[in-house]
Length: 206
Image 1 (tube, rainbow, N blue to C red):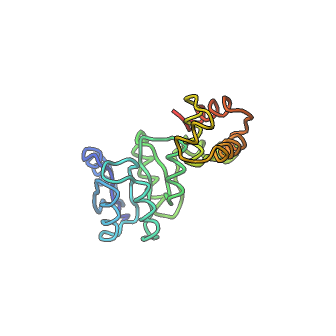
Image 2 (cartoon, one colour; image 1 turned 90 degrees about the vertical axis):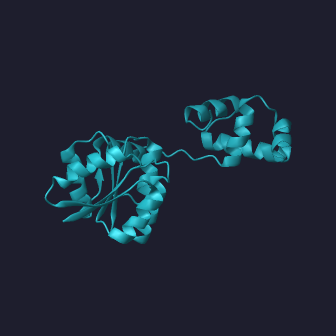
Image 3 (cartoon, rainbow, N blue to C red; image 1 turned 60 degrees about the vertical axis):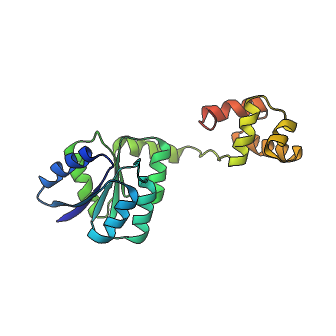
């Protein structure tokens, strides 16, 4: 039997999953959790083989819980089951140690097959998620801006001069220029307007 822990902050979702899994001869639901911290605690008590983990929960996110579970209980495999398929969500989950990433619109057959595969030590990904990861690995990864560089660029976006930015952030004007030069280099642009445009296109600025 493969022991499964269900983690989702919606009771009706957990009930639906439990109903599907209990119909399988080799799958057994060993517990349910409504938040990340509760899931980590239950893994220590129930010792599931596989955790079905929602990503965004009111009581504590699934990524943090995934990282804690994979670090403390290496024998337990975490499979993310979520409605979100953005690059950021996928990468955060994989980096936290998730063995799989499924979307909630997957079929019952795909879900149960993924649980069995994860229990065997395999990695399981929804096809669209796998395609996103492959595309990202093949393309260049943009260098990220630091929190301070984003602050400076936000003020540039509203029309502040270097001197005004320095006064608002309590840093020297020369430091503002240094931040901007680094930002230009990371975004591969040569002026302030282009930097703001590229940053907005990448979702770095509102």
